Length: 210
Image (tube, rainbow, N blue to C red; front, top):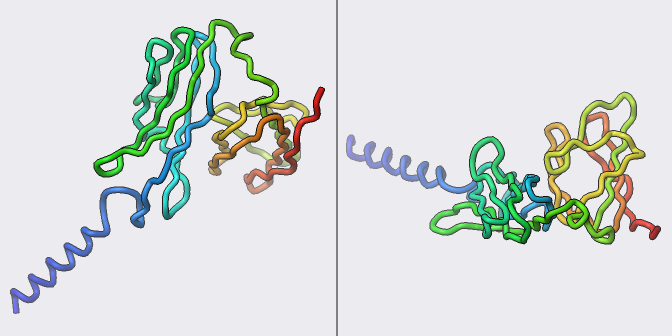
């Protein structure tokens, strides 16, 4: 009888261990990583915060910025923090282009995502092509509190002030809500802050030519 109980106990332990550890909860597999912002430009000495968003086979997207291994292909052009208080923070060193990569270990292999970073000598040469820019406005009622951050930068709360962003995927944060949005080039977006802290897209239309 003692041997039978022991065998059942061991079987239960094996079954439990098969459901724990390694990878994401529920057996979810990391299928890809998006880096934002996409192909930004900075001036020598300036910094750029990158974010890594992981896509999973069975579950919601997750922010992998703090857990990814960040590298710069040309460290003489730009360096990037792997650890510390700001993982994914790149610093321009010299004029040129480098490839920024975020990799996340999964079993015996890694899943990666990458984008280019261009470093220039002056702000004028680093300015974004207007046709590749998305314009974002934030509006809210007077009784609504809260703030919106895009790629870690606080947005102005005035509906008359636009924030120009490069087209592509950007990381939005409103209170406890975090999500990624892919912005189209030459497009105006108007977001509204709701009383429950959620963010609603009121309008997205192609920007009129000036």
